[in-house]
Length: 272
Image (cartoon, rainbow, N blue to C red; front, side):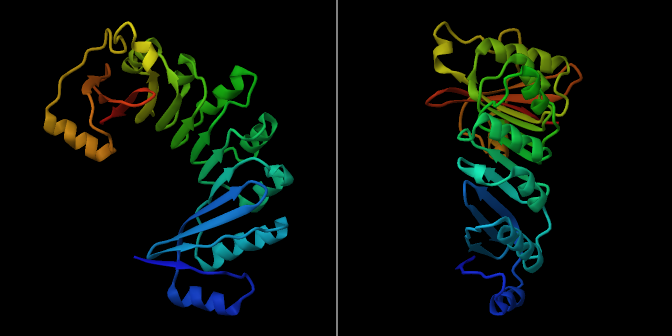
């Protein structure tokens, strides 16, 4: 694989001819917004890095059109919002960018700005939300019930929030408790969260002072080391504990664990 670093211009005939002759095609586009914008292009046969700082939305729009035209890029881009993005009108950015693949909303944004970003870019394939910007519980729960491919949420979440998750994959980074996870598992076994294929979460180490109770009342089945090894490789898990559980309808899943520096990392992975 070759690595290129080139300076592009939307008006350069030489650059356009080079891109066309090399048949460079972008496989992913990242837009980072924090008072300036960077667009990273990832090419199938090489890795191409180029950055720019558009001073106006017109300039930004020209770059987006250039990428779509000369790099044959039609999928939605990934968009990341950080602090100091208030200089841009989010509604105009939405009109320029269109739909997005991955939406990342940093905890550095104000609550008002976070809500505006979520309002305008309301249908990403994947959502990374570092902080809950809503005062009303019902509003954050409206986020959980969306059918994302993946949601990553790094703030306090309740059992009700967990049961409302409608994504295929959920990563809840803020520590939960053994009791809350145990309650969630029992609901899942009875049929909750039908779209869920994987949930990653963390139980704080301080919650284990009086012992382990997160699997209390759960029928767990032992697994062969070969089966465990295959699941770890497929799902990129570190060495740790693993047991099999089943829903009432017979759907198999595993509970994998790994002792991390913040506590016990837990992975619920549906196998069917």
